Image (cartoon, rainbow, N blue to C red; front, side, top):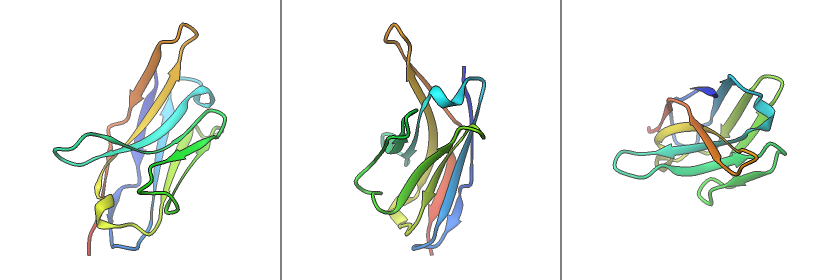
Length: 120
């Protein structure tokens, strides 16, 4: 099992920056594909960014060029640097750990979420 704890959310003005962190424990961090997702009330959770165990990254079109996902395997932590924030980035942000077992079963774990509010 993997335990994930997010931090770094808060209130920021439009155009500002925040860095989210997700600390993982309970498993070998480096083998997991990690991701950030976000959700607003009444909407489905959506992908923000992912980073594989091999450091390949993927971003939602809405955040490309503004957000950067990275990982520090020595610290068992994944980060999401968010720049040029917009009001539409307001959401609860969730950390995800995913990998496939040798038998092909997909394992998914989620953090409890951290709120990001972009408002003047």
